[in-house]
Length: 450
View 1: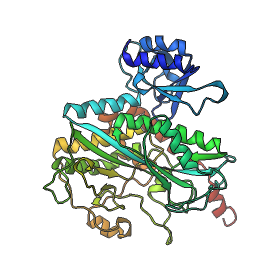
View 2 (view 1 turned 180 degrees about the vertical axis):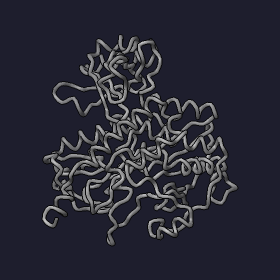
View 3 (view 1 turned 120 degrees about the vertical axis):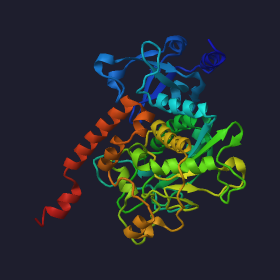
View 4 (view 1 turned 135 degrees about the vertical axis):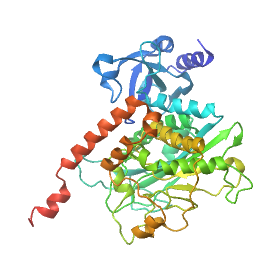
Protein backbone atom coordinates (compact mmCIF):
# COMPACT_ATOMS: atom_id res chain seq x y z
CA UNK A 1 0.00 0.00 0.00
CA UNK A 2 1.41 3.42 -0.97
CA UNK A 3 1.57 6.49 1.27
CA UNK A 4 -1.43 8.20 -0.34
CA UNK A 5 -3.62 5.15 0.29
CA UNK A 6 -2.44 5.07 3.90
CA UNK A 7 -3.26 8.78 4.26
CA UNK A 8 -6.79 8.19 2.98
CA UNK A 9 -7.45 5.29 5.35
CA UNK A 10 -5.98 7.19 8.32
CA UNK A 11 -8.11 10.27 7.54
CA UNK A 12 -11.28 8.18 7.38
CA UNK A 13 -10.54 6.75 10.81
CA UNK A 14 -9.46 10.03 12.43
CA UNK A 15 -12.50 11.95 11.17
CA UNK A 16 -14.94 9.08 11.69
CA UNK A 17 -16.15 9.23 8.08
CA UNK A 18 -18.87 6.66 7.53
CA UNK A 19 -19.45 6.92 3.77
CA UNK A 20 -17.01 7.04 0.87
CA UNK A 21 -18.43 7.71 -2.57
CA UNK A 22 -16.55 6.21 -5.50
CA UNK A 23 -17.18 8.51 -8.47
CA UNK A 24 -16.85 7.91 -12.20
CA UNK A 25 -18.38 9.37 -15.33
CA UNK A 26 -20.24 7.82 -18.24
CA UNK A 27 -19.58 8.68 -21.88
CA UNK A 28 -22.16 11.48 -21.86
CA UNK A 29 -20.60 13.13 -18.82
CA UNK A 30 -23.15 12.05 -16.20
CA UNK A 31 -21.67 11.59 -12.75
CA UNK A 32 -22.07 8.08 -11.31
CA UNK A 33 -21.23 6.83 -7.84
CA UNK A 34 -21.26 3.85 -5.54
CA UNK A 35 -20.91 4.24 -1.78
CA UNK A 36 -18.71 1.96 0.28
CA UNK A 37 -18.00 1.65 3.97
CA UNK A 38 -14.50 2.72 5.01
CA UNK A 39 -13.72 -0.88 5.98
CA UNK A 40 -14.14 -1.90 2.34
CA UNK A 41 -11.84 0.76 0.92
CA UNK A 42 -8.54 -0.97 1.68
CA UNK A 43 -9.52 -3.97 -0.44
CA UNK A 44 -10.91 -1.60 -3.10
CA UNK A 45 -7.47 0.00 -3.39
CA UNK A 46 -6.01 -3.44 -4.04
CA UNK A 47 -8.68 -5.07 -6.19
CA UNK A 48 -11.15 -2.33 -7.15
CA UNK A 49 -14.93 -2.56 -6.90
CA UNK A 50 -16.84 -4.67 -9.40
CA UNK A 51 -19.54 -2.84 -11.37
CA UNK A 52 -21.99 -3.79 -14.12
CA UNK A 53 -20.62 -1.91 -17.12
CA UNK A 54 -23.63 -2.75 -19.27
CA UNK A 55 -25.81 -0.56 -17.02
CA UNK A 56 -23.65 2.53 -17.69
CA UNK A 57 -24.20 4.66 -20.82
CA UNK A 58 -21.62 3.64 -23.40
CA UNK A 59 -19.50 1.33 -21.25
CA UNK A 60 -20.16 -2.23 -22.42
CA UNK A 61 -22.58 -4.73 -23.89
CA UNK A 62 -24.29 -7.24 -21.60
CA UNK A 63 -21.85 -9.93 -22.68
CA UNK A 64 -18.93 -7.70 -21.56
CA UNK A 65 -20.55 -6.27 -18.45
CA UNK A 66 -17.96 -7.06 -15.77
CA UNK A 67 -15.84 -4.00 -15.06
CA UNK A 68 -13.81 -2.71 -12.14
CA UNK A 69 -13.91 0.76 -10.56
CA UNK A 70 -10.38 1.38 -9.27
CA UNK A 71 -10.20 4.28 -6.76
CA UNK A 72 -7.55 6.91 -7.48
CA UNK A 73 -6.35 7.88 -3.97
CA UNK A 74 -4.86 11.17 -5.23
CA UNK A 75 -8.44 12.43 -5.78
CA UNK A 76 -9.61 11.77 -2.21
CA UNK A 77 -11.56 14.67 -0.75
CA UNK A 78 -13.67 15.08 2.38
CA UNK A 79 -17.03 16.84 1.89
CA UNK A 80 -17.53 18.44 5.34
CA UNK A 81 -20.65 20.36 4.29
CA UNK A 82 -22.66 17.31 3.18
CA UNK A 83 -22.64 15.13 6.26
CA UNK A 84 -25.28 16.75 8.46
CA UNK A 85 -26.19 14.69 11.51
CA UNK A 86 -24.64 11.55 10.00
CA UNK A 87 -21.09 12.93 9.96
CA UNK A 88 -18.79 13.85 7.11
CA UNK A 89 -18.63 12.07 3.77
CA UNK A 90 -15.82 11.77 1.24
CA UNK A 91 -15.35 11.04 -2.46
CA UNK A 92 -12.69 9.45 -4.64
CA UNK A 93 -12.65 9.41 -8.44
CA UNK A 94 -12.19 6.01 -10.06
CA UNK A 95 -10.55 4.73 -13.20
CA UNK A 96 -12.59 2.04 -14.93
CA UNK A 97 -10.71 -1.19 -15.71
CA UNK A 98 -11.47 -4.47 -17.41
CA UNK A 99 -11.26 -7.68 -15.36
CA UNK A 100 -7.71 -8.32 -16.65
CA UNK A 101 -6.58 -4.98 -15.17
CA UNK A 102 -6.29 -3.09 -18.45
CA UNK A 103 -7.92 0.32 -18.87
CA UNK A 104 -11.47 0.33 -20.21
CA UNK A 105 -11.58 2.16 -23.55
CA UNK A 106 -15.05 3.46 -22.70
CA UNK A 107 -13.85 5.36 -19.60
CA UNK A 108 -13.78 9.12 -20.39
CA UNK A 109 -10.99 9.59 -17.85
CA UNK A 110 -8.91 7.07 -19.80
CA UNK A 111 -9.65 8.88 -23.08
CA UNK A 112 -8.18 12.08 -21.63
CA UNK A 113 -5.26 10.24 -19.98
CA UNK A 114 -4.35 8.76 -23.37
CA UNK A 115 -4.20 12.18 -25.01
CA UNK A 116 -2.23 13.64 -22.09
CA UNK A 117 0.27 10.79 -22.48
CA UNK A 118 0.60 11.63 -26.18
CA UNK A 119 1.28 15.26 -25.29
CA UNK A 120 3.81 14.16 -22.67
CA UNK A 121 5.68 12.14 -25.30
CA UNK A 122 6.21 15.46 -27.11
CA UNK A 123 7.37 17.11 -23.89
CA UNK A 124 4.11 18.98 -23.19
CA UNK A 125 1.89 19.32 -20.13
CA UNK A 126 -1.64 20.50 -20.92
CA UNK A 127 -3.30 23.04 -18.63
CA UNK A 128 -6.89 24.28 -18.71
CA UNK A 129 -8.84 27.02 -16.95
CA UNK A 130 -12.66 27.07 -17.32
CA UNK A 131 -15.11 29.93 -16.89
CA UNK A 132 -18.31 28.09 -15.96
CA UNK A 133 -21.70 29.73 -16.52
CA UNK A 134 -25.03 28.42 -15.25
CA UNK A 135 -28.50 29.59 -14.28
CA UNK A 136 -30.15 29.74 -10.89
CA UNK A 137 -33.90 29.30 -11.16
CA UNK A 138 -36.69 29.04 -8.65
CA UNK A 139 -37.47 25.45 -7.80
CA UNK A 140 -40.59 24.17 -9.48
CA UNK A 141 -42.07 21.50 -11.75
CA UNK A 142 -39.81 20.12 -14.49
CA UNK A 143 -42.66 19.92 -17.01
CA UNK A 144 -41.10 22.02 -19.77
CA UNK A 145 -42.59 25.34 -18.65
CA UNK A 146 -40.31 28.39 -18.71
CA UNK A 147 -38.29 28.51 -15.46
CA UNK A 148 -38.35 31.62 -13.28
CA UNK A 149 -34.87 33.11 -12.65
CA UNK A 150 -33.99 33.91 -9.04
CA UNK A 151 -33.18 37.55 -9.85
CA UNK A 152 -33.47 40.26 -12.50
CA UNK A 153 -29.77 41.12 -12.50
CA UNK A 154 -27.39 41.71 -15.37
CA UNK A 155 -23.66 41.63 -16.07
CA UNK A 156 -21.59 42.18 -12.90
CA UNK A 157 -24.66 43.32 -10.96
CA UNK A 158 -24.37 43.02 -7.20
CA UNK A 159 -27.68 41.30 -6.56
CA UNK A 160 -29.18 40.55 -3.19
CA UNK A 161 -31.53 37.69 -3.93
CA UNK A 162 -34.84 37.29 -2.21
CA UNK A 163 -34.03 33.61 -2.58
CA UNK A 164 -30.55 32.06 -2.78
CA UNK A 165 -29.13 34.94 -0.77
CA UNK A 166 -25.34 35.15 -1.17
CA UNK A 167 -25.43 31.97 -3.26
CA UNK A 168 -22.09 32.56 -5.01
CA UNK A 169 -20.31 33.21 -1.70
CA UNK A 170 -21.68 29.99 -0.25
CA UNK A 171 -20.80 28.03 -3.39
CA UNK A 172 -17.24 29.41 -3.50
CA UNK A 173 -16.71 28.66 0.19
CA UNK A 174 -17.93 25.10 -0.33
CA UNK A 175 -15.60 24.62 -3.32
CA UNK A 176 -12.59 26.02 -1.50
CA UNK A 177 -13.27 23.83 1.54
CA UNK A 178 -12.72 20.79 -0.69
CA UNK A 179 -9.58 22.17 -2.31
CA UNK A 180 -11.00 23.58 -5.57
CA UNK A 181 -9.48 27.03 -6.07
CA UNK A 182 -11.78 29.71 -7.47
CA UNK A 183 -10.33 32.66 -9.36
CA UNK A 184 -13.43 34.88 -9.23
CA UNK A 185 -17.21 34.85 -9.53
CA UNK A 186 -19.86 37.29 -10.67
CA UNK A 187 -23.36 37.69 -12.04
CA UNK A 188 -23.55 37.05 -15.78
CA UNK A 189 -25.57 38.83 -18.49
CA UNK A 190 -28.99 37.18 -18.12
CA UNK A 191 -31.34 37.25 -15.11
CA UNK A 192 -30.41 34.45 -12.76
CA UNK A 193 -27.20 33.66 -14.67
CA UNK A 194 -23.98 33.16 -12.71
CA UNK A 195 -20.32 32.60 -13.55
CA UNK A 196 -17.64 31.00 -11.38
CA UNK A 197 -14.11 30.63 -12.78
CA UNK A 198 -11.76 27.91 -11.57
CA UNK A 199 -8.02 28.42 -11.37
CA UNK A 200 -5.91 26.73 -14.01
CA UNK A 201 -4.63 23.21 -13.40
CA UNK A 202 -3.55 20.23 -15.44
CA UNK A 203 -6.39 19.05 -17.66
CA UNK A 204 -7.21 15.84 -15.77
CA UNK A 205 -7.44 17.67 -12.44
CA UNK A 206 -9.57 20.37 -14.06
CA UNK A 207 -11.96 17.81 -15.56
CA UNK A 208 -12.32 16.16 -12.13
CA UNK A 209 -12.89 19.61 -10.63
CA UNK A 210 -15.62 20.44 -13.16
CA UNK A 211 -17.51 17.26 -12.33
CA UNK A 212 -17.17 18.09 -8.62
CA UNK A 213 -18.14 21.73 -9.29
CA UNK A 214 -21.45 20.74 -10.90
CA UNK A 215 -22.31 18.49 -7.98
CA UNK A 216 -21.42 21.08 -5.34
CA UNK A 217 -23.20 23.96 -7.09
CA UNK A 218 -26.40 21.93 -7.42
CA UNK A 219 -26.21 20.85 -3.78
CA UNK A 220 -25.68 24.42 -2.53
CA UNK A 221 -28.58 25.61 -4.69
CA UNK A 222 -30.91 22.92 -3.32
CA UNK A 223 -29.90 23.84 0.23
CA UNK A 224 -31.15 27.38 -0.50
CA UNK A 225 -34.42 26.24 -2.03
CA UNK A 226 -33.52 26.93 -5.66
CA UNK A 227 -32.19 24.94 -8.60
CA UNK A 228 -28.94 25.29 -10.58
CA UNK A 229 -28.96 24.22 -14.21
CA UNK A 230 -26.12 23.87 -16.71
CA UNK A 231 -28.58 23.64 -19.61
CA UNK A 232 -26.91 25.66 -22.40
CA UNK A 233 -29.99 27.72 -23.39
CA UNK A 234 -32.96 27.74 -20.99
CA UNK A 235 -34.45 30.98 -22.40
CA UNK A 236 -35.22 31.95 -25.99
CA UNK A 237 -34.62 35.67 -25.45
CA UNK A 238 -31.58 35.54 -23.16
CA UNK A 239 -27.94 34.50 -23.67
CA UNK A 240 -27.00 30.89 -23.03
CA UNK A 241 -24.41 29.40 -20.69
CA UNK A 242 -20.97 28.64 -22.04
CA UNK A 243 -17.75 27.37 -20.53
CA UNK A 244 -15.06 29.49 -22.14
CA UNK A 245 -11.88 27.50 -21.55
CA UNK A 246 -8.31 28.76 -21.56
CA UNK A 247 -5.71 26.29 -22.83
CA UNK A 248 -1.92 26.27 -22.60
CA UNK A 249 0.99 23.89 -23.13
CA UNK A 250 4.08 23.90 -20.93
CA UNK A 251 7.48 22.34 -21.56
CA UNK A 252 8.67 21.87 -18.00
CA UNK A 253 8.47 25.33 -16.44
CA UNK A 254 8.40 27.13 -19.81
CA UNK A 255 5.15 28.19 -21.47
CA UNK A 256 5.31 26.74 -24.98
CA UNK A 257 2.85 29.35 -26.29
CA UNK A 258 5.07 32.35 -25.44
CA UNK A 259 7.49 34.13 -27.77
CA UNK A 260 8.82 37.53 -26.73
CA UNK A 261 9.73 38.39 -30.35
CA UNK A 262 6.22 37.89 -31.76
CA UNK A 263 3.88 40.94 -31.96
CA UNK A 264 1.22 39.00 -30.04
CA UNK A 265 3.89 37.27 -27.91
CA UNK A 266 2.55 34.02 -29.38
CA UNK A 267 5.02 31.29 -30.33
CA UNK A 268 5.07 29.19 -33.48
CA UNK A 269 3.82 26.30 -31.32
CA UNK A 270 0.93 28.42 -30.07
CA UNK A 271 0.01 29.52 -33.59
CA UNK A 272 0.02 25.94 -34.90
CA UNK A 273 -2.07 24.84 -31.90
CA UNK A 274 -4.69 27.51 -32.69
CA UNK A 275 -4.64 26.49 -36.35
CA UNK A 276 -5.38 22.91 -35.30
CA UNK A 277 -8.30 24.07 -33.19
CA UNK A 278 -9.70 25.96 -36.19
CA UNK A 279 -9.12 23.29 -38.86
CA UNK A 280 -10.87 20.62 -36.78
CA UNK A 281 -13.44 22.84 -35.02
CA UNK A 282 -16.44 21.55 -36.96
CA UNK A 283 -15.33 17.95 -36.33
CA UNK A 284 -15.16 18.23 -32.53
CA UNK A 285 -18.22 20.47 -32.04
CA UNK A 286 -20.50 17.47 -31.43
CA UNK A 287 -18.33 16.70 -28.38
CA UNK A 288 -17.91 20.21 -26.98
CA UNK A 289 -21.59 20.98 -27.69
CA UNK A 290 -23.27 17.61 -27.43
CA UNK A 291 -26.92 18.41 -26.78
CA UNK A 292 -29.79 19.46 -29.07
CA UNK A 293 -30.13 22.58 -26.92
CA UNK A 294 -26.43 23.50 -27.35
CA UNK A 295 -27.06 24.86 -30.84
CA UNK A 296 -29.76 27.25 -29.61
CA UNK A 297 -26.92 28.94 -27.71
CA UNK A 298 -24.51 28.98 -30.65
CA UNK A 299 -27.16 30.27 -33.09
CA UNK A 300 -29.61 32.27 -30.94
CA UNK A 301 -32.60 34.32 -31.96
CA UNK A 302 -31.18 37.69 -32.98
CA UNK A 303 -32.69 40.51 -30.94
CA UNK A 304 -31.71 44.19 -31.31
CA UNK A 305 -31.30 44.78 -27.57
CA UNK A 306 -29.24 41.64 -26.86
CA UNK A 307 -25.47 41.26 -27.08
CA UNK A 308 -24.46 38.09 -28.93
CA UNK A 309 -21.00 36.75 -28.13
CA UNK A 310 -21.67 33.11 -28.93
CA UNK A 311 -18.84 32.04 -31.23
CA UNK A 312 -20.60 30.33 -34.13
CA UNK A 313 -18.00 30.90 -36.85
CA UNK A 314 -14.54 29.38 -37.25
CA UNK A 315 -12.20 32.29 -36.64
CA UNK A 316 -9.61 33.52 -34.19
CA UNK A 317 -8.61 36.93 -32.93
CA UNK A 318 -6.68 38.84 -30.31
CA UNK A 319 -9.08 40.27 -27.72
CA UNK A 320 -12.01 39.55 -30.09
CA UNK A 321 -14.85 38.01 -28.08
CA UNK A 322 -16.87 37.18 -31.19
CA UNK A 323 -14.16 34.79 -32.42
CA UNK A 324 -14.21 31.05 -31.78
CA UNK A 325 -10.64 31.15 -30.47
CA UNK A 326 -9.41 34.25 -28.65
CA UNK A 327 -5.87 35.19 -27.63
CA UNK A 328 -6.27 37.12 -24.36
CA UNK A 329 -3.86 39.86 -23.39
CA UNK A 330 -1.31 38.46 -20.96
CA UNK A 331 1.30 40.37 -19.02
CA UNK A 332 3.62 37.53 -18.05
CA UNK A 333 5.27 34.81 -20.18
CA UNK A 334 3.71 32.10 -18.02
CA UNK A 335 0.23 33.44 -18.74
CA UNK A 336 0.33 32.90 -22.53
CA UNK A 337 -2.79 30.99 -23.50
CA UNK A 338 -5.67 30.68 -25.94
CA UNK A 339 -9.37 30.68 -25.13
CA UNK A 340 -11.92 28.44 -26.84
CA UNK A 341 -15.35 30.06 -26.56
CA UNK A 342 -17.72 27.58 -28.21
CA UNK A 343 -17.72 24.89 -25.52
CA UNK A 344 -20.75 24.83 -23.23
CA UNK A 345 -20.92 24.03 -19.55
CA UNK A 346 -22.96 20.84 -20.05
CA UNK A 347 -20.19 19.04 -21.93
CA UNK A 348 -18.29 15.95 -20.78
CA UNK A 349 -15.05 17.74 -19.76
CA UNK A 350 -12.84 14.67 -20.19
CA UNK A 351 -13.87 14.18 -23.81
CA UNK A 352 -13.96 17.92 -24.57
CA UNK A 353 -10.42 18.47 -23.30
CA UNK A 354 -9.24 15.37 -25.16
CA UNK A 355 -10.59 16.49 -28.56
CA UNK A 356 -9.33 20.07 -28.18
CA UNK A 357 -5.88 18.80 -27.20
CA UNK A 358 -5.96 16.33 -30.08
CA UNK A 359 -6.83 19.08 -32.56
CA UNK A 360 -4.11 21.38 -31.23
CA UNK A 361 -1.45 18.67 -31.28
CA UNK A 362 -2.44 17.80 -34.85
CA UNK A 363 -1.81 21.40 -35.80
CA UNK A 364 1.65 21.24 -34.23
CA UNK A 365 2.49 17.86 -35.79
CA UNK A 366 1.42 18.89 -39.28
CA UNK A 367 2.69 22.46 -39.06
CA UNK A 368 -0.70 24.04 -39.81
CA UNK A 369 -0.50 27.69 -40.87
CA UNK A 370 -2.59 30.16 -38.91
CA UNK A 371 -4.83 32.36 -41.10
CA UNK A 372 -5.19 36.10 -40.45
CA UNK A 373 -7.06 36.95 -37.27
CA UNK A 374 -10.54 38.46 -37.16
CA UNK A 375 -10.65 42.11 -36.12
CA UNK A 376 -14.37 42.81 -36.62
CA UNK A 377 -17.41 41.53 -34.78
CA UNK A 378 -17.90 38.31 -36.74
CA UNK A 379 -21.65 38.23 -36.00
CA UNK A 380 -22.13 41.73 -37.46
CA UNK A 381 -20.72 40.69 -40.85
CA UNK A 382 -23.07 39.61 -43.62
CA UNK A 383 -23.00 35.94 -44.74
CA UNK A 384 -21.29 37.06 -47.94
CA UNK A 385 -18.60 38.95 -45.98
CA UNK A 386 -17.98 35.98 -43.69
CA UNK A 387 -17.70 33.66 -46.68
CA UNK A 388 -15.26 36.01 -48.42
CA UNK A 389 -13.11 36.13 -45.28
CA UNK A 390 -13.17 32.34 -44.88
CA UNK A 391 -15.19 32.23 -41.65
CA UNK A 392 -17.03 28.93 -41.97
CA UNK A 393 -20.01 28.38 -39.66
CA UNK A 394 -19.94 25.72 -36.99
CA UNK A 395 -22.59 23.01 -37.42
CA UNK A 396 -25.97 24.67 -36.96
CA UNK A 397 -27.66 21.76 -35.19
CA UNK A 398 -26.82 18.43 -33.59
CA UNK A 399 -27.66 16.49 -36.78
CA UNK A 400 -25.10 18.44 -38.79
CA UNK A 401 -22.54 18.19 -35.99
CA UNK A 402 -22.72 14.39 -35.76
CA UNK A 403 -22.63 14.13 -39.57
CA UNK A 404 -19.40 16.17 -39.69
CA UNK A 405 -17.94 14.22 -36.76
CA UNK A 406 -18.79 10.88 -38.41
CA UNK A 407 -16.55 11.79 -41.38
CA UNK A 408 -13.59 12.89 -39.26
CA UNK A 409 -10.33 10.96 -39.17
CA UNK A 410 -9.05 12.78 -36.09
CA UNK A 411 -11.94 12.35 -33.63
CA UNK A 412 -12.13 8.51 -33.67
CA UNK A 413 -8.35 8.50 -33.20
CA UNK A 414 -8.72 10.72 -30.12
CA UNK A 415 -11.80 9.12 -28.57
CA UNK A 416 -11.10 5.54 -29.56
CA UNK A 417 -13.46 3.57 -31.76
CA UNK A 418 -15.65 2.36 -28.88
CA UNK A 419 -16.46 5.83 -27.49
CA UNK A 420 -16.67 7.31 -30.99
CA UNK A 421 -19.22 4.73 -32.18
CA UNK A 422 -21.35 4.88 -29.03
CA UNK A 423 -21.34 8.66 -28.99
CA UNK A 424 -22.56 8.85 -32.58
CA UNK A 425 -25.30 6.25 -32.00
CA UNK A 426 -26.51 7.99 -28.86
CA UNK A 427 -26.57 11.45 -30.45
CA UNK A 428 -28.35 10.22 -33.57
CA UNK A 429 -31.02 8.76 -31.30
CA UNK A 430 -31.31 12.06 -29.40
CA UNK A 431 -31.74 13.97 -32.67
CA UNK A 432 -34.37 11.53 -33.95
CA UNK A 433 -36.39 11.90 -30.75
CA UNK A 434 -36.11 15.69 -30.92
CA UNK A 435 -37.05 16.11 -34.56
CA UNK A 436 -40.17 13.94 -34.18
CA UNK A 437 -41.41 15.77 -31.07
CA UNK A 438 -44.30 18.18 -31.60
CA UNK A 439 -43.39 21.30 -29.61
CA UNK A 440 -45.43 24.03 -27.86
CA UNK A 441 -44.05 26.42 -30.51
CA UNK A 442 -45.72 24.43 -33.30
CA UNK A 443 -49.04 24.19 -31.50
CA UNK A 444 -49.00 27.90 -30.70
CA UNK A 445 -48.12 28.87 -34.27
CA UNK A 446 -50.22 26.43 -36.29
CA UNK A 447 -53.09 24.97 -34.29
CA UNK A 448 -55.42 27.92 -34.67
CA UNK A 449 -54.37 29.12 -38.10
CA UNK A 450 -54.07 25.96 -40.16
